[in-house]
Image (cartoon, rainbow, N blue to C red):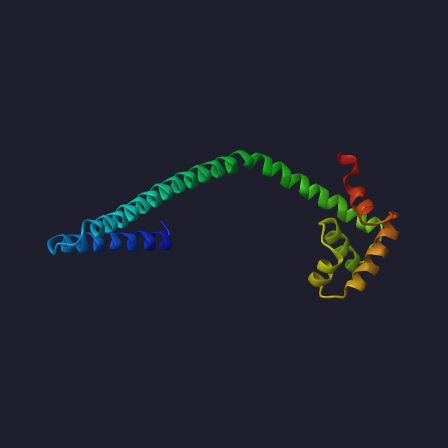
Length: 164
């Protein structure tokens, strides 16, 4: 349980106990029946909220445990696929680097080209590379020209077209 939920339960428990003591004093001092009924309703409402909160927390705990088990099962099942995916990524990375060399991209152009392939915007690339967005746009234009493509989408498609 989180601290916040424990605090709520503690406060409600204090309210129940205080009201029970107050009811006992009121009964001994001859308080009206209506007053005792009001305090009894506060006690019952507080108990209902405590019980409801505890049931809710118990269900949340069980749901969280199911999610953890499912996540752990998926991680175990995904391990072989992750190894294959990692190998495919390495091969694709190698193909991309060779193609960049064939296109005679400069080091800066290669960095920008990789970030373009990863889907970053010109503004994000400029921030990552600590340069101006205009510079990134100019480098992207040079990359597209050397690659013989018309723009970002055609550039990305050049690498994945044959996989689909």
